[in-house]
Image (tube, rainbow, N blue to C red; front, side, top):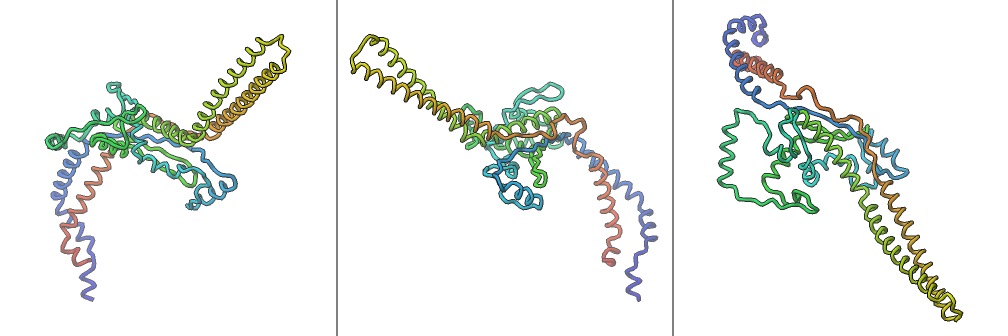
Length: 352
């Protein structure tokens, strides 16, 4: 019975103790409020924009309905797709260095119009930071400059600005910053791909979100139609060669016929028939190649996926963070809990 009374909590005594230390709480709140404001107010604001698209998947006949039903329960049956890159892998695609390198050349402009450049230069030279950390950034950059070895940026292939296979340290750091600002999620139940973009400027945020959507569509379209486009270029070349060969055969036949209009010799007639047959053969080859070329062109159009945009990119009006009032309130709450725990540390040992 004595042990039970010992562990009983006297709420009235707790309230009296708290009121007797109201000046302590006031000091803690003032100090916490000042430190919280000092920390959170210099933090640069950032904005968020999202774009939702419903991509068309390359679904094989007979398996699409079953795959869609299974995906609603969280199971993946390969999506019934013959594609190596299907919507479930789009989030992983955003982590690809090759895809991110292609985003560095996007043209961006700030809302105030003072900055108009590419995204690489924007991330490198126009990012705001907390003023409290400015001395540390300067010190870090100074130390890096002492031990940093000169690096040469190797240009990519086909006129590209960067080589994803071999990046400099600076470019790799910028790509890491880019990947932290852009994310992609896929919903198995609705087959909707959502692209989320955050940035310190609202206009840059919207421009980047729309550009990423377009780059994703171009990337997937190029992948889906790659084989069809190669086939088309192949048959186009064969068609051009067959047309040149047919034109040459037609010129030879016309020239020989014009030169022997009045000839009655059998050898002349036989030669003319041979040239005519050769011309007809070349024409048949040309016709066949042209048909294959048209079929390959139709295949390119057939394999081109359709992306239905559900949510367009818009310039955000309000910043997405940091939540300054919530942060300060949370710090005050934690400071109150910590101060209360310190006042009742002996009682807490007995209660627990």
